[in-house]
Length: 187
Image 1: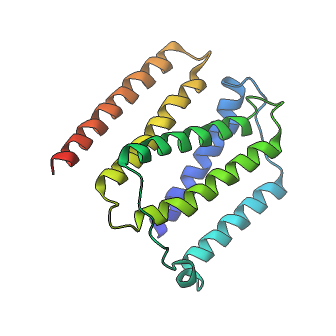
Image 2 (image 1 turned 90 degrees about the vertical axis):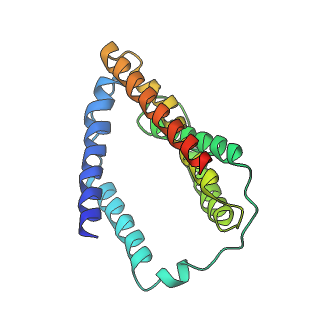
Image 3 (image 1 turned 60 degrees about the horizontal axis):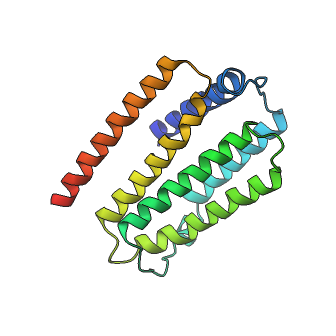
C-alpha cells in the first residue's frame, strides 16, 4: 500500500508537471497552468474520499455482486476500448485548451457518460462465465491502441525526432502486444 501510494504521488506530480508546465506552453502554445489552491484542496479531498470508500468500512457494501450480462465478442470489446480511450484523450485535450470555444458543460457531460458506461457495463460483462482472456486482452489492446493513435495530436508542430521516437516505440509496443495476443490464442 505504501508503494502504491508513493507511485500515485510521484505519478500525479509528473502528470501535473508534464501537462501543465511543459505541454501547455510547448505543444498547445498556452501559458503554464497553476490551479487555484481551492481546486487542489478539493481534488485532494475527493481522492481521499475515494480511497476511504475503497478501503474503509464501506468497501463491503461497494463490492456487492453485479448481475452478469453476456459480453460482446472480443473484437467488440477491443473496439469499445479504443473508442473509450479516444474519448478520454479527447476530453483531456479539451481540458488543456486545445479548443477553448468548446462548451465545458458538454465536455464534462461527455466524460460523465463515458465513466458511467464503463462502470455500469464492464463489471457486468466481466462477471459473466463467457468473459475470458480474449475479452480482457481485446479490451486492454483497444484502450492502448486508442491512446496511442490519438496521442499523435500532441506531436503536431513538435520536433520530428520526438515523432519518430513515438512511431518506433508505439510500433514496438503494438508488435509485442500482437505477439502476446497470438500466444494467448494458442494457449
